[in-house]
Each structure stands twice: as structure tokens, then as C-alpha cells.
Image 1 (cartoon, rainbow, N blue to C red):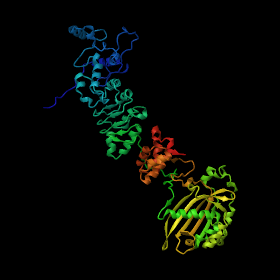
Image 2: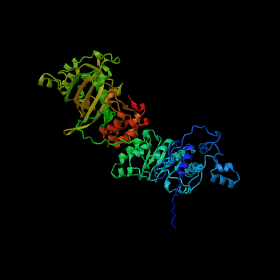
Image 3: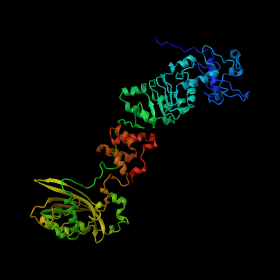
Image 4: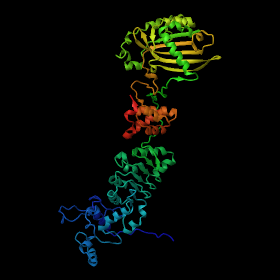
Length: 591
């Protein structure tokens, strides 16, 4: 059996003006608002005339009190209050106009009686209200039989914006407060209907506009949080609207999400999918011919790691240093047994103060009072041939050959001629960094060992930094090294002496590029560990530059193909729209 067709009754002439008058008296529409009929023309009466006369009966309840439930007696029809128990008289009063001022309060062709307009809307809103879910269902309003039966104009039509104002004002009085509204499948082509929604329900959390005909961003701007509306909106559904479907069809889904997210910074769900609360667009490629600026990193791509010893027993390396440096400091001649007969040795002096040490003021700091007592002359000219700094060396080929010492005996003579030192290897191991691993040299496999650290120079007690590279080989049985208790013998020894710089340079963790740059805390580093190594390095650098939290930083990089420069440019474009919680707290960084 087919569903019967219903048609909306034609309102009686003048009934819209009567309804408008009732809504004005109830305070649900503005006093100067004009009701329009279906033709879009104002009613003949236009705006109600303003009377300067005082109210005839100041004790008479106002219609707005009826809506607010403040006067139950006033909620009754006027005829019922005038003639209780006399239906015939009530009917006569209604037909004759009843009390003065209600001459037009009649029912014609199904048009509602003005005294009942508010009650009808309240009854309709309540029929669609689910207080347990805090959900107001305003879907498919044009198909609603209640509205058709009572001659109420759908608030979704272009000529009924005042009806929408009435509905949302009534909704604002519902208890508990409305959290979710669905305006799905109403054929909306304009966002104007949502202006009173945002006004009366500013704390709305969830909104569905699915299946409408919204075609442009200006329709969404009527409720955009950027304009101070619906700032607590957490979920929005726009599926089935041309503005969304066209972007998806043209592969602009990401731009669509970003546009929505910019308008609603607090948004967490869009079209049923979780999204970052602020989207980042990939900036369009520039057609400008201007020079592209390269990104200056705030931290190195990889962290400084602890000492690296691989392919060899670490005890061999540690035993070598524990024995070598005390002899170098106190009895250098005894080291002749540690060097192979054909060993080579050279040293160079780098007299420049490292930039970080200069910025930190190490060489003029009261913590290092003896730095000014140090002299470079013994390092530049001593050691039986002087510094082998080939970038600064003078004296031609003779100086080049004299600064390279061949054999264990020449090596020891050069070492003995160098200034006296003291290496605190056992007492302050954190001041030293050691790497060791096998290297192939011809038919043999040897061990490359590098050490970075510092020593005190005597007698001034000033401190210098150094780098030293050894090539070691296992001491053969019967060799002088083996006979004197050395597990390994030295094939090559290169020493670089430098002006003091802090041993923080090889402290495990992220490395600063410039003094004063932020470094991530241990907690932040741990939070980044699940990412692949390359992505972790890029994301760390973005966070250090912007202070964005992990969610926002990852979203920015993903939408820019993990290109750091594009991500930074994109951040500059949208940072004014970011909420405060998009950023990490100060304790996530180390100064």
C-alpha cells in the first residue's frame, strides 16, 4: 500500500502577520523584524507601530514568560481563562475576537492561532529532543508531518529565518544543554540558518550538515570558530555537500581538511575521521626566480652517541689507555716498547679558539684562571720538528719531512720534547670519548682507535683539548711490545692539540649547531624514538625551531612530504591560527 501524499495547507491571508506578532510579543524575534509571505514581500502591516502608551495592565504575564514557564496560568488559552467550564462561551469569544487586542486570533484554513504558535514550536522541538544523548535531531524538516499539519513553515526554507531563530532560542533553554545537533538532509544551500544556531548554542560540541547543498566556504564561515563562533566544536560532518565532494573528486582532500581545520582549531573529528586539530597545507611551488634560502639547522640530524667500540674486545682498548697515558705524562721514554719499529708519529697545533668556546667565554672565565698562562710556542716549534699543520706550515719540503717522525726512536725523541701534560683518564672519564673498530690495511686487519679529551699542561695548569688517532696491531709473540706486557703495539700515532672547548660536545644526546640553541629533553627524545631514524631527525629539528608538540609537528611534516623547508614555510603561514596547546611546555627543552 503506497504512502499517502501530504500537502502543506495554504495559510490564510494575514495569518503570517498574526504569527509574527505573537513571536514578537514572546520575545523570540526582534521587534522590528518583518514577516514575509511566500512571495517574499512584506505583509501589508509591515513592522508593528511603536506605542508610547504604558501597558494597560502591567500585571498581565508576558508571552515570553509563557515560553520560559514562569506563569502556568498564562500558558492557557485566553478563552479558557475567561470562561472556565463553558466551552460554548469560549468558542463564542474566540469567534468574536475575545478580549480586546486579539480580534485576529482565529484559526483559518489550519493556520495556527497566535496564542498557540510558541507552544507548537516548543512541542515540536521537544518531540525531536533526546535529553539522554543531549541530541537535537533537526533532520529532514521539510518532510515533517507535524509542521504540515499545523501550517508551520519549515525553518530551512529561504523565507523562514525567523522560524530558525525561534527554534534555536527554544533549544537554548533545553535541559541538559544541547551538545549535538543534526541538520542533515535539509537541502540547505546557505549557511544563514546557522547564524542563530551559533548565537544561541555557542557551546555546541557536535554538528552534522550531511547531505545538504552547501557549495562554498562562505557558508561555513557563518559558524567558523575563527570568527568567534562555535569555538568548542569537536566534530563536524559535511559529507554529501558539493563543497566537500568537489574537492575530493579533484584530489584536493587535504586542502579541504586544512580549510576546515583552520576555521575550527578545536576540531577533532571531520566526516567521521580523526584529524589533527590544525591542518597544514603543502605550500604551492613558487614561480619566483628569487634565490632560495637554505635552512640553517638548529641541531644536527643525528644525536651524539656514547663511545663506539666494535669488532674488538673493549678491555683491550681500555687496558691500552689506562697504561699509555700515565706513561705519557710521567715516563715517556718507557713508551718506546709500545711503538712498532716502523711506527710513525706526528703532531699539529690548532691555535684558534673554537667558536663555541669563544661564545661561552671559556678562555676568560674565572673557572679557568690559568688559560692565559698557556703559550703555543712549545707546540709550534718543539717536538723535534715542530707542528705538522700543513695548512699553516712554513719552511717548504724540509719542514714537512722534519715534522713526520719515522720509527719508534724518533717518535720517542719527539714526544719527550713536547710540554709536560697530565691526563685525568681514570678520574674524569666523561671528559673523554673513544671510538674503536677494525680497519683493513693491505693483507692485515688492524685496529683504528680515536680519542677526544683534554689535559692539563704543566707547570701552568692551563687546560687544552686534544684529538688523537692510533692505528694498533696485535703484538706478535716475541716482539718487544709483547715482552713488555703490551697486548697491542702502535703502528701510527697522530696528535692534534687544540684550544680548550667543552667536553659537552661529545656528551650523548642531541648536538647544538649554534650556542644558545634549544636541545630536546630526555623525555622528548624518548617520545620521538618510535619514529624511523630519518624522520625522527627531521621532526626533532622542526620541534626545536617551532616548539610544536608531536601531533602538530608530525601533521605539518606529513602534509609537506617530510620536507623541512616546506614545513617551516607552512608553519609561518598558519601559526597565527594555532591554539596554545599546539606548543610544548618549556620543560620539554634544555637551554
